[in-house]
Image 1 (cartoon, rainbow, N blue to C red):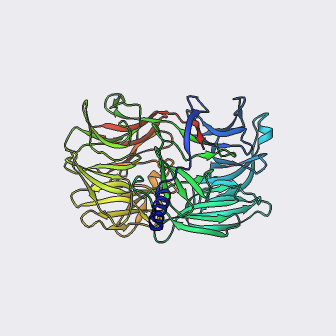
Image 2: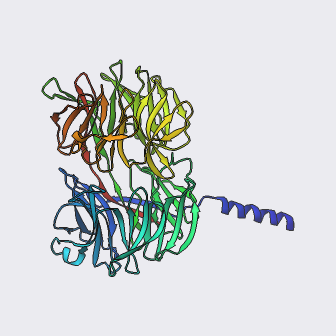
Image 3: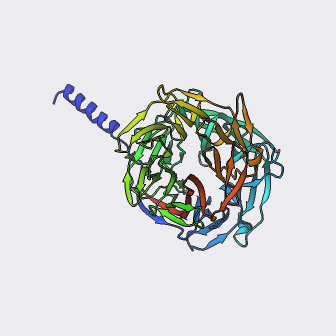
Length: 555
C-alpha cells in the first residue's frame, strides 16, 4: 500500500468518525415516581440525590403544595403548611433550605395584579412537619420567576419590569441586586458543579442565542442557535444542563434534543407517547426527572334556551379546544390531539373530519372561519395557513412570526394577531395580501379580538378592557371586574362575551352599554369560545394528570 493510499484512508476514516452524529447517551428505562389522580409538577432532586421535591395540585383550584419523596423508602412528606400558588423551587448548596416563588393578589394593584414573593423553607424541619415559609423578597411592581441559589450565596432570578425579562443576581444579606444578563431572556439554567449559567435569549437581530456566563456575570461564550427542521416555527426552547460536557438538553414535547455551548442542536431518538418536560438531572448524572402526562379537555355545547342543557361535542381522552361555529353552516371547527398531535378538525353532527396534517410537536394557536364559512385560517408553528374544506393548505408568508390568530376579516384580507417583534409579543394586524405585519399598540395585551364592524377590543396585563375609538383606545368601566385572570373572550353581533373568576359567563352590549350575567358554569370551565342560536361553546377540563417520571440513562 502506497503512502498516498494510506493517507487517503486515514482522511476518509477520520472524516467518517467526525461526521457521524454523536450519541452522548441513550435512555434505558422510564419509570414513574408518582402515581396519583392529581397533578404533580416542578420536580427536582435534592443535592444528595436522596429525595425528589415536587408540586401536588388541588383538583378544585389552581393552587399547590410542596412535597418530598424519599427515593429509597418511597415515603412522601408534605413540606408546605399552606396550599398556595408556588412556582419552581431550588435547594441551597448544603440542601438545608428551599427557595420558591409565591404568587399572591396585590393588595393595591397599581402596575400589576399579581405580586411575587421569594420564600424560604427549612427542608430539614419540614421533613418532620409542614412548615411556614419566610419571606426573603417581595416584588409589587415587577415579576420574578425561576430562582436558583448559586454557590456564591446569591440568588439568580428572572425579573420583568415591563416587556422583557432580564437575569439578576440578588444578594439577600445586603438586600441588593444587579443585572447579569439583559438581552430578552426567556430561560436559563444553573450548574452548581460548573458554577455557570446557561442563558437562552433573543437579541436585537431576532436571533436566538445561548450565552454561557459565570455567576458574577462574566460572559464566557455567546453563540446563535439555529433550530433544525424537526422544530417548527419560532419556538422558545428551554434547555437545562446535562451530564455531558458542554451540553444542554431540552424537550419540545414529544422530542428530546441536545444543545451544545456553541449553539448546535441534535435530536435524541426516544419513543414518547405523551409530552414530557426538559429533564432535571440527578447529582450523579445517571438519571433525570421529567413531567409526563395527558391533559384532557372537551368541547361542550351549553343551550341557553333549554335549562342550560349540556352536550359534549366529539368526546375523546385528549385535549380539545378553540371551538368555533361555521357561518352559514352547521359544522364546528376545533383543535384536537386525538390523532397524536395538535390538528384542526371539523365535526358536523356525528361526522368527524381531520383537516390539517401538521408535523409532530406542532402548536396551533388560533382557528377562524371565513365570513362565508367555506374556508379556515389557522395559526400554527409561528405562521398562518389557509385551508379549504377539502383540506387544501396554503402557507401565507409574513415578515414577522405569528404567535396567535385572534380575528380574521376574510372580506378585507386582514387578520388580528399577536406577532413577535424582536422577542416581544405585540398586538398587530396582518395584511394577508402582502404579508406585512403592523403593530397596533405598545400596551401589554393579554387577549384581543375585533367586532364585525372592525372595532378592536382587548384586555391589558391588568385584565382591564379597552375599545378602539377614532384616535385612541378607551377603557370599558363596566367590565373592570369581569376580565378574570387572563381569561379569553369573543364578540358576536356587537356584543362582548366573557367569563370571570367566579365562572360566570357574561355579555356586554357595546352600543347600549348593557351588561348581564348569562349563567354560572362549572369550576372545570377553561374558556367560552363562541355562541350561535343561543348555544354556547365551552372548553371544559376533564383530566389533567401529570406525573413525575425518571429517565434512567445508559452510558
